[in-house]
Image (cartoon, rainbow, N blue to C red; front, side):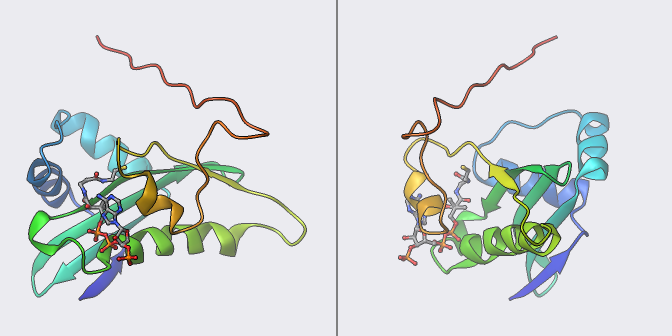
Length: 137
Ligand SMILES: CC(C)(COP(=O)(O)OP(=O)(O)OC[C@H]1O[C@@H](n2cnc3c(N)ncnc32)[C@H](O)[C@@H]1OP(=O)(O)O)[C@@H](O)C(=O)NCCC(=O)NCCS
């Protein structure tokens, strides 16, 4: 398995989302989002992209989105490797004595996957609930 940086393309993105029954966005919307990503990681087996993850953000606050491993390749550590690479990107860019924060929304029942990488469920002692507003037009 090879892990590639910043080569995630529209076709692979849609193929992977469809493989886990996630909805697609329009081509234009998707391409703009991929273009605006800070960092993407893809897992490639031969010529086939089998996993992906994206990082978006501004250098202080980041968000991890689109962590997907094709069902035929799940439970082999690929999702963990991709997510760790995204976290490493942030670690490398956080200044000495500085602080960065990575947010994400876990799918129901997937919280445990992210806890293994050190993410904490919210709410907890210091944080209230995560909040979300989806815009439909
Ligand atoms: C969630 C997902 C990315 C995990 O990828 P993966 O490559 O199968 O996961 P890994 O093999 O790297 O698993 C890493 C660890 O997380 C655990 N884990 C994996 N899938 C899990 C799940 N669905 N729920 C809870 N824990 C899970 C594994 O047990 C493993 O722990 P271990 O090393 O102690 O055995 C993958 O199942 C997927 O693409 N699911 C559909 C899309 C999705 O839900 N994405 C996440 C959005 S929040």
